[in-house]
Amino acid sequence: MTIKETQQEIVEEFALFDEWMDKYEYIIELGKDLPIIDEKYKTDENLIKGCQSKVWLHAELVDAKIIFTADSDAIITKGIVGLVIRVFSGHAPKEIVDADLFFIDQIGLQEHLSPTRSNGLLAMLKQIKMYAIAFQAIK
Image 1: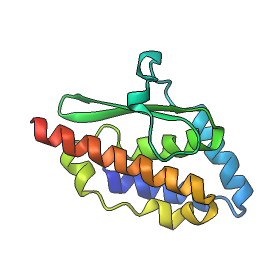
Image 2 (image 1 turned 135 degrees about the horizontal axis):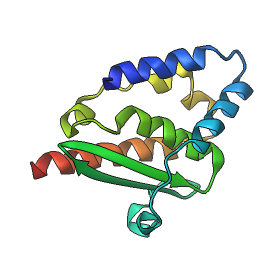
Image 3 (image 1 turned 45 degrees about the horizontal axis):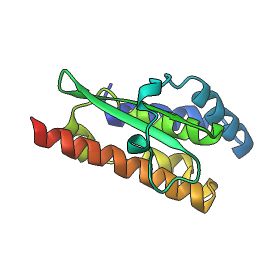
């Protein structure tokens, strides 16, 4: 599935909910399904700078595709990072760098986050793009 197709799938899932409280509950559920990051990657080096809560993001290049794992100490943030990883994990660095990100606006996520969570989301996206740029340079 392409990055665009995954984003479209997320938009369709969120369209099933009328109320934002239901959407928050869904985000929390997504966080519970987040693949557990190996404890050895829960280091200061993998902490996302700019997040109010602790968010660890690890990336590795496997068969020319970046695989992301993450965790957070906050349940909503864990769900948000889970959504972001779902979109980008398993794609080539160039695909990630070139991706047009639209699902966040289309589901109304950013406008329903506190300013600190919104900043954290932007920091997550920036870190993912930075990993992709770094892995692109390695090839």
